[in-house]
Length: 318
Length: 318
Image (tube, rainbow over all chains, first blue to last red; front, side):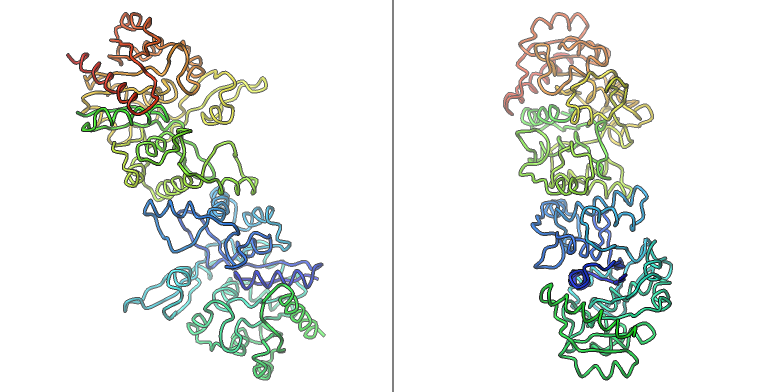
């Protein structure tokens, strides 16, 4: 079975670990969000791709969900001693090596997709990891800071400001001019199932869908498209998806997110047991819906979620 | 008193520490060798400039004479795990930060001289440190490897091959087209004394002198030019200067190095007590010469050497 997964960072990576356990023989292609990529200290940092790579490759800091295990921060401390910022983005020494290799390869002319493939030769994540695009797309968030409207990089909003102010708008700058990376459309065309993990519907999956051709390729694939709600009981399970949903005028409910994707894109939707009441609403919108436990507390619980998603896909197919 | 010093790496840096102790009120400008600069992992590494900066700024690894104190090697280990080389150049995590800052500034369009000044704002070396040029100059060494003549980067010869094969030729590639960095010619024009520390006469001081205009500016300054022999008792005090001298057809003796610089450039020359016999030969070549202890065993011994050099300069002037 060929499964294509659209993934953001922590939530996507953890879901993928469960999916691999649930479907060990499946051929899994991950289309990774690159809208929160950022240039820091002249280096290209791809937080979501790296989180997937480190998580599936066994190098992740399990407790925080991002960054490397057994990490040290000598480079960061030295940069601070030089007065070179920003200092709010926590790059560790081991992590720096990844960005150094990536930046060197990009500088030598390799596209991000080839660089990602090369990095994965070390990590062997057990999935094919593709950036959504080789072009530069950068998610910006419009905010009011001291009465002035400003657009800040998504990482600045998320990490520096900790989403403490309202997001007034979210714009994937460059997305309209971007092209899907090599392999993205092909993987979708050959997919048997497309899954949306419980990633952020706006700045993770929404950004991937903003790459021209991706949404169409999913629709044209003619295979079940099943998503898992990142909203449980009216709040995001992790992160600050509520801020992002408000910015695009979507309620922070499991049903509203499904309706935001829409029945033109989504065939099935899993909500948590806490949201059983949402099932009827989602089904009324033309999307098959089931309520199942959606807490990724460990790999086994996550694998069970993945099995439910695949079962729902088969139901849709039949 | 305005002193200009042409400096390589370890020897130059240690001499400068002694000079600062010997002449605490002097205005010291250092023209640093950049011929052994190297690009590693997409980063610009300037070993000699950094050795001077770290040594005078209190950040040097005292035992090895280069690199940072309290150093760790996480980035290097990770690069090796990615299979990205070379692995023979020992870059530590703290040191990496310097190269990251430098590379970022160069990428932003600042010349190396401005970058060096910015880095020195942190290190406050107590001297004005200028790269010899803002242009790219790279010292290559011709060697026979497995019967084949090849040109290797100086660092590859020095660090990877440990000068284990003969150097057939030494070429500062790009030197002929280079221009002295801003401030270099001005510092020489305003100097009261010019000093050559016991640095490598070929790949350190020789490379600086290969930048068009530098040799002429020293001659035209009309001030005493005094050097200290890096050769004691027929062997280099440190490093492998003998290999470099052989490559350019100069004997590894204190006298031969003085004559290689020549009386047109050099006014005074200090040899070690072990080379008292060389004094007459050097003086016969038109260069005033004294035999004094030349072992930089500690700062006080080095300061004594600097005082002897300055005293010889005053003798020349008078």
